[in-house]
Image (cartoon, rainbow, N blue to C red):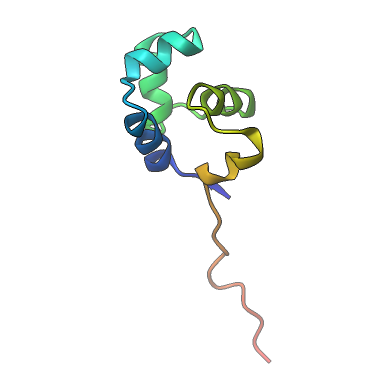
Amino acid sequence: MTLNLLRLRAERIAKGMTQEDMAERLGISRAAYAKREAGIVDVGANELAAIAEVLGINRDHISIFFDSSSPIGNESKS
């Protein structure tokens, strides 16, 4: 599973929040948040839970931030 950073950004924008707003609510700098949203710095599990909380997304629905993909080329040939 891969974290979908575009979905993360889209949810923030849909809530009418800037990166500055998110950073302030998370207790980090705007630059630190921007690096996470851009994929420069990995988003940890606790950070993702905090982001979901700020966005009003229940932890049971946190999977909306993930893309599931299957590896290509690992199919068995008979």
